[in-house]
Length: 159
Image: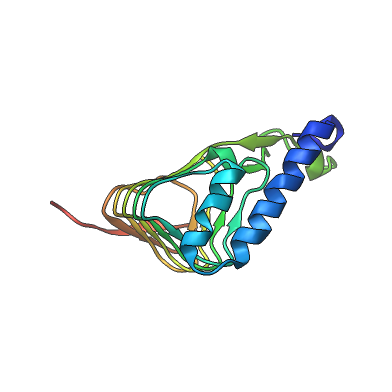
């Protein structure tokens, strides 16, 4: 949403999301964090743990769906929006480019390594492992390991 289209309702919603995010970020143990993330609008399955110091996109947390028994480790960023640079041109301020939003889905049993960044529109498959510091810009298949910047699948486990 562009800054010039804010309503009092949107501002209050943003304040609520930031209060929930701040509380969740510092609570211990992880089970105490889950209600705050759900109150932000995230959909989170049973047995999922989100570590301290995880950054959740406050502009659209309702676009984040996390399955059962997922582990999201410290320092991870889940981003549901980014600038649409498809019409960016020389001399144009990048902040004039509109934002585009897309959901993030993390399927059951996945593990998101320390400091990873999950970009908008990404689905991480069931049982997938994302290596520390990876920047995930594309879908990761089930039961695969993805590492690097940008993340690449280095191994897939067969049934």
